[in-house]
Image (cartoon, rainbow, N blue to C red; front, side, top):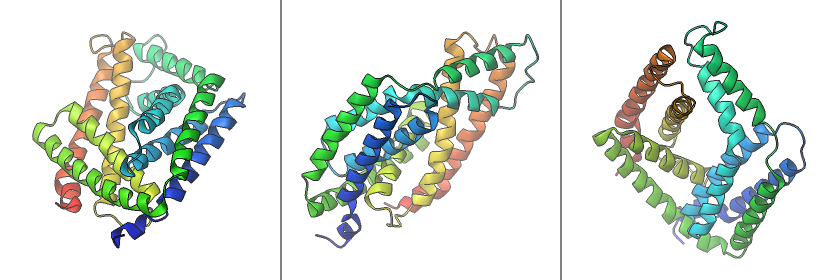
Length: 268
């Protein structure tokens, strides 16, 4: 085992602990009658970290897909809450009675309230059993073998992220920024489980960029929702003016951070 892999020796135990925590949360949600927004949010955040760590440690692709499916199935409650919060953060025109802004606000709030209910029991049970299978696979692996795989996988993810960032600066397309956010979450989330004490180059800068890209994603999700509900740029001009202005501001911050801070910190 290389000296670098020593930092990953506790990785298998951390992955198993994350699975156990997810199983516990899923069992609790299935038995709740009250709002579960925060539980679902925590579960999805943990799932994103777990997926990144599983990819780094060389787990089979079906395991990665299972974790992704769980996040999507349980995402409605959190997504609705975030849409409402993003909308109110735009700081646009006052929502006078009878205005298009008041209609948007009331519909967003209605959907957020409806999404706060617990997910169906069948969804929670399938999700719990899927995580249980992943845990069983991890329990069968060797600490040193997994540590070596995780160390190699972390380096692969770092190089992939750097390549993605360079391409994003060259093309500056929405899909590239979306892919950057995915790769950032995989690297940051995986490292937080596999080697939480390792001071990886670029970690702090990557965390800042993930926050910017998360805000950009929230704005894009709200924009899609507005379009789908008929509140397009010609119908809600004021709303879209504020939305586009915020998107442009966040995008500029992301580009500057990538060019000046993150890429140099990540090295070659």
